[in-house]
Amino acid sequence: MRAPRRRATAVAAAAALAAPLLLAAGPTDDADDLARRLVDRASAEDAYRHLERFQALADEAGGHRAAGSAGYDASAAYVHRLLRKAGYRVGYQAFDFVYTETLAEKLSVVSPTARDITIRAMTYTASTEEGGITAALATVPTDATTGCEASDYAADGFTGKIALIERGGCSFAEKQAAAAKAGAVGAVIYNNTEGALSGTLGDAGSGKIPTGGVTRAEGEKLVAEVAKGEVKVSLELREFREERVTRNVVAETPGGNAAKTVMLGAHLDSVTDGPGINDNASGSAGLLEVALELAGSHRTPANKVRFAWWAAEENGLLGSEAYVAQLSEAQREQIALYLNFDMIASPNGAQFVFDGDDSDKAGAGPGPGGSAQLERDINAFLDGRGKPHTGTDFSGRSDYGPFIEAGIPAGGTDTGAEGIKTAAQAETYGGTAGVAYDPCYHAACDDLDNIDLGHFETNIDVIAHAVGTYAHDLGSLTRPVPSASASGEARGGGGSRTGQGHGVTE
Image (tube, rainbow, N blue to C red; front, top):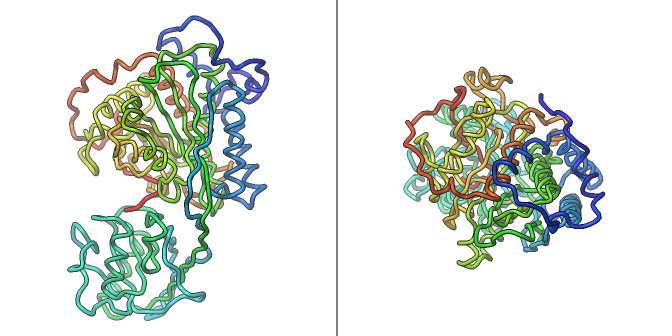
């Protein structure tokens, strides 16, 4: 793990400032000089102090920092305070949402052979009564749009039963709504890839029947059992809901051309099950560390640089959606690019870069014009430092999603969530094959012990290089990207391609 101490802490430096540094006069260095300075000075060791603070705030607030909670509000205040002291124009963007907290998530086979199965309640699921429901399973035949259409449900075959549906083809909300129309009293959605299945139905009005997610292995095992005869299960999914207000934190440099705004973001909230130190205090802390170093550079960027810490990502990208929704057309056109950093220090991680040009030819298509160039620039930086990297599906399943929907070029990195590391990836990146990139994803153990400082350092350097470069030079966004072969191997070191996402709705 690489975490050299390269200077005094960012927090101490920011606190010692007698005047807003971003307003200080001084020569404007070129992009390469600023990028080199930020990469040199922004360190995982300094950013780790922010992780320690986020952990303490979670500990003081019941163990989590979920949007709408005291832990989140304290985290947002901490970020806001440091940025204001550093000289940024910083503010809150408040929005209403429905706060949720899981009260029960249990699935057990009652017959023919009793056993317990791990299930995760979908955010905004309808709730069962306390004690749950007991019913037979009914499987939905698999095809390209499994469980998405009324024709997938045989007449009277699902009435009073719990639908067992494979993931894919449409949103979780559409699947459970179609099952409900067919008379199902519950829905169990099983993954179509390796790893646990955790997701959201999108909003509080979407939940029609109790709905949860299980692994592909458990789902396929249940399908095989149902094929042999009736399988009865007990399902209990209960969720607390309450209308609350939460806030994004948005900060920008006082100087710089607003018509060429460079924007970077990370979600600040955790799930209610844990403190969310990798997911996503890691991205939040890395972004904060680089922002403070930019302030400490005493240089006014040629382009305006804007940073955002999103609320309620775990509820379905609500913070970034609220932000993009309030932008006028002119304001959208001013944003030259958006980079997203979510889970950048997974303990069994790999280095994933969003496949903005769809050169890997898997999953979603390419992003808006400029996204391919952002991917190329991140890959080139990692190549220059001898760091292997792997393409990951440009699915929009994190806070860059609303930006690409608005036609804004986007990109970013992560190090993996609940997906399972392959043998090839273990050879490339180290770690353990057959184990999740983050075994503590959305769990109580996502704490300070759940951080890989080597991945943390690498991705902070990615953030620093991007900020330093694009603060002065957007020229690379117009340079063509040569056609790449459709390969799933990691550029610069090998490894398989994988899709990752948070606030997942499908």
